[in-house]
Length: 219
Image 1 (cartoon, rainbow, N blue to C red):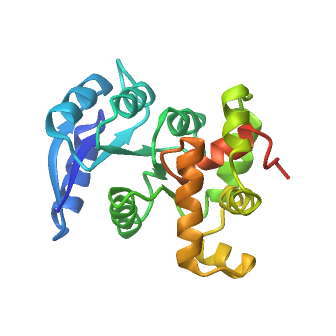
Image 2: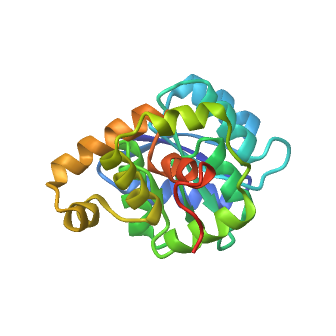
C-alpha cells in the first residue's frame, strides 16, 4: 500500500486529491498539510512513501519544505505540483530534492501513475514537459559546478557518460537501450551506477548534474 501525504494550502484541492487517491486500491492518504512547516512535521511523524507537495503556500513554501524533507534522509519522496506550466519555482524544488513535478491540471490517471512511479523509486515529470523543462531549466536555474562535481564526473566510464547524456536528453531506458544497442537490464544497471557515483537521488537530479557540469548543453 502506497501512503501519501497531501500538501496544499487550499482545502478543496486537498479534498479533491484525497478523494482521487483513496479511490485507488493500492493507495491511502495518511495526512494533510496546509503549509510547508506542517508538511515537514507530518512527514517526519508519518513517514509517507510520497509527499504530494504544492509549491506556493503561505509561510514556509513547498521548496523549503522539500529541501528539509530531502535533507532529513528519510524514506519519503516528494512529488511537486504546480499550477503554472514550467513555473520557475518548480526548478528550485527539483534542485532541493524533489523527485519530479506535475501540473495540477494533469489527468487524474497521469497523477496516479506518477505517484506510483515515485513510490517505486523512479522520477517523473509531467508528460509532454520533459524537453521544455530541460531547456527552460538550463536557461534559468544553472548555478555552475565545483571541484566535487568534477571529481564525480571523472569517476564515470565512457559508457556511463553516454548513458547519463541520454538520461539528460530525456530518453527512457527503452530508448537508451535501442539507441546504444544494449539490453534494457544493462541500461538499468548503468543508470544505477551513475546515480551512485554522482550522488544523485534519482534521474531528475542526474539531469541537473549533467547540465551543471557541462556534460550536456542546451541546444
